[in-house]
Image (cartoon, rainbow, N blue to C red):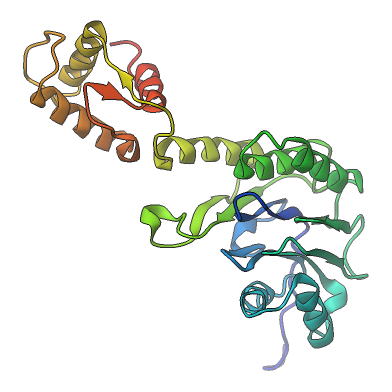
Length: 298
């Protein structure tokens, strides 16, 4: 190989969906592939700008360049036209783009491995290459649009699962990723990256990704339902749990006090439930159900 020769890239044979939730302004990408750590290459998103999936023989500059163009006034089609005009290997690329206004494009170069193609519509673009067939993309779209009752991250996950279960990447399964951004939605409100989950190497990565999404909801969502007031028998049970965890050395009386509260707050920290702390003698219902399952034998 000469000093100037560029290594031949392995194609990221992938199926993905990029989408905007027009109600909340959230933007996201869901992707799966028979490829190690697909989440490291394909999904890109920026709140208020857009979401991008760059795949097949990935041009790793497409993601950040597209987001910068979208953030400075370009629309999805403008991004695609720029890439078509500036990349002399565009025939090997596949890309899906949705902008913050809901305009979307899906492009598949003629050099992508069959079956390859995509569909774009208002608020979404779905695409894939080296797939079991066009029905993979069709099922992703059907699932995305057919469950308006679900929150946006779960709809993206369900769309990915629908494509996976009808064949997905025809070589098999290995990795999956979910990226969702929204203004101020990141941890602590300090950034826009709300959900960034990756399954890098797994025999059945899409269900595993959905399991991680459930954990993300449990650990990082804040309470959305009224607190559950603890009865005396429930407080007694909590105190027994805290004694067993060596966090409480007081009397198991069923009466709430500051020692019980401090010990339970410590248990919340151990179980990564800090975001769901509301203070006793009441508990967030989601955290309460988790604790009952976690310490069912107490």
